[in-house]
Image (cartoon, rainbow, N blue to C red; front, side, top):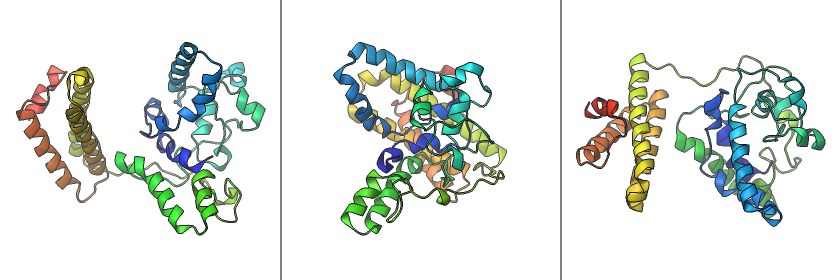
Length: 286
């Protein structure tokens, strides 16, 4: 409910599907904002206890990103379940700002932010991104805050753009007006442009190659210079952005992909990339 913090988290909520992969859809900025929630615990919780709890909390929240599991009976009163978390990810008006709990749902029940799953949940942001470009997904909320900040008159109002809710505007309540939340008709369709089958196959093969390169980077990161690590990360990000544009049928996607492939061929032939999965060797050579 704080705009700048929501900007660091909304990447996770931008998915219009709800499955285990949604749990892995995270913002690169979120770890730079989480510390302010963890810092108070440092005053009275031993670091070892905190570390174990933090990992357990993260692991627990992975499996609840699913539509396969329905309600879990009496556990629904205590634990954050898939049903409760589906509401948290919904853009239906009744889902907004609800069910914040990570492991336990009792806190939402106590503080009035609990909402049971009622009507069918439509996932994603109230204003969908409609893009597969990971760079745009990461930077879009910050760009919006930046533009709104400079377009809003008055110093106090500018601060409110940053520290009040995403729906706030001059003359509005801190969280904005509920009636401005887009109405859900039930006819919403997730963003999924139609692309040729060969392009899907191409993207799958090259995504497997990039996954291999990422695995190789993790395995050798301690032996590489910071510059080499940075360049490899940049190439992986470039690749993911290129795949996203291809899946959107963007007119300039082909040019970017050709450039990416030429860069890959160059660094591979020079021996800077060594795959971890031998069965992908043919894909590299092709």
